[in-house]
Image (cartoon, rainbow over all chains, first blue to last red; front, side, top):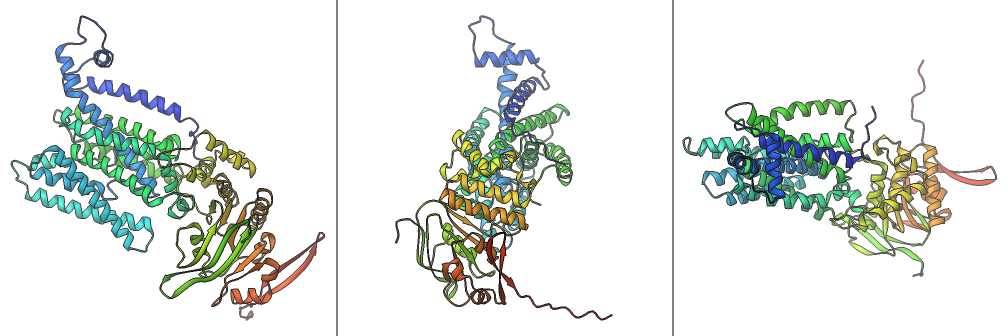
Amino acid sequence: MPIPNFSHAPRLWYALLGLLLVLLVIASLGMGRYPVPFSSVAAILGDQLLPLPTTTPVGSEVERLVVLQLRLPRVVGAVLVGMALAMAGATLQGLFRNPLVDAHIVGISSGASFGGVVALLFALPSVVVVGSAFGAGLLALLAVFAMSRASHASRITTLVLAGLVTGTFCSALVGLVVFAADPEAQLPGIVYWLMGSFSQLDYRRLALLAPPLLLAGLLLHRMRWRLNLLSLGDHDARGLGVAVERTRWTALGLVTLMVAAQVAVSGTIGWVGLVIPHLARILTGPDHRTLLPISALLGGLFMLAIDGLARGFTAQELPVGLLAALVGTPLFAYLLWRRREGGLGGAE
Amino acid sequence: MSETSALRLEGIGHWYRPGEWIVRHIDAELRRGEVLAVLGPNGRGKTTLINLLLGLLTPREGQLTCHGPLAFVPQLFAPPFPYSVLEMVLMGRARHLGLWQTPGRQDHAIARAALAELGLEGLAERPVTQLSGGQRQMVMLARALASEGEILILDEPAAALDLRNQAAILALIGRLADERGLTVLFTTHQPQHALAVADRAMLLLPDQPPLVGPTATVMQEESLSRLYGIDLHRVEVNHAGTHQQSFIPLFERRRRPPTA
């Protein structure tokens, strides 16, 4: 079956997905235990963005409070996290020339989790949680690289195995911290954090989350074409005049920054980075110039939808990490099946 | 050194483990528009030589001078993602663009011109993974053209291709040297490929410095037999008004006679 090639129409997809994202953001802001009508949300947002000199305030006091103070930071945070995870996944898949890689598989997420958990155990301030998660994520990445360097076997296989080893080791360390935590005071918070959640996302945490995600995301977006080059393999890329090591480490550092900031604020959320780039490749093809922005849009949409499910269906909120895995795994299984049919293409 | 010198190797040598020289005492000079074929069995240092030329390795001994940018065509490989032909050729622009840059209008124009020069315009939107080996090798050559390199380095460009595609690639190499004035260095396992397009040949002989010189001079029964470690026999044919020579490897038939 030939691969449908829509890569000539990426603008159409940008417009469509961008519009969907705006609509879903407005819908999410209205949704919850205190529903706010779609039109009111739109009016409140519009008033914030473009304040008109009217005498009557838009929406009721409660509506404004719910939409702007309670829900907006959470919705913006969820969109940013989804974008970051999807971009991180797309980047890592390009770097490792393998469509089955994401931040979990190369050990960055588990490393960042360990860093975050340790900081939580000692009840350190949020900035330290982010810093600790980033440091540990970076250490995990270094460990993976050191291990893959030491081996002469196929780079990709070694890298994935080294990631598995590092990830498992970090998970064991996380387990150790969980074991050591006070079951009354600390454990519930740590376990809930580990399952991934946006329920704690207020403006203070958003201020911690947004700058690293935006900075790393924008820089990765700027170097998106380089990912095409790196995905050809070291030898060929060097032959084309690419400073392979420098480029790869820049991209990996940016990915680690994004993943660590995300893990520190909202816990571990898997599968987004694995599933979304596959979907994006089906929509607009493998060129990272379109793959990264399309993945970001799809990731934001996906994460927001998952958060909507997490908030909407039960009185007691489900952790988004769990839901992302519950929705992501069957979707990934379907994509694997498509791949067998020749739908995704690849090196095999 | 002549003023039109494009590539100069002076006493190049390299080892990976001290004392175990992979290549040594390589002396060669290529003028602009000349084609050099490098012949040698597996493990005699063809790939090492290419890596030295590309700057991926630094020679342990000797000096290498390139007058002009290099363009590299690797051995046939499948990219991990089904990039389109145009995207693949655009990647040739890498050395002209910075870390934070993406190809612009001019880069696209250059890539399309390179495709047009090789008659590949029709394939621009096709995924490279769907092309035949011969087409993919042509795409890689188009990518080298798009990089605007003046010294073309090709790693076994005609290996893994059928005879017709081998002929097409060799004809193209000759055309690029003659019409574009590109200097070409390619590795090959086939003496015929050297005879078809190379001005000069380099034989990576065992336990002695490589033999370098005009193709017709260097390519002899004796030297080739020593190069490959099996006997080769020269044949000459007159075909359609042209005189051609070739070397046939003399494989011994090693089968038991039928018993029934």
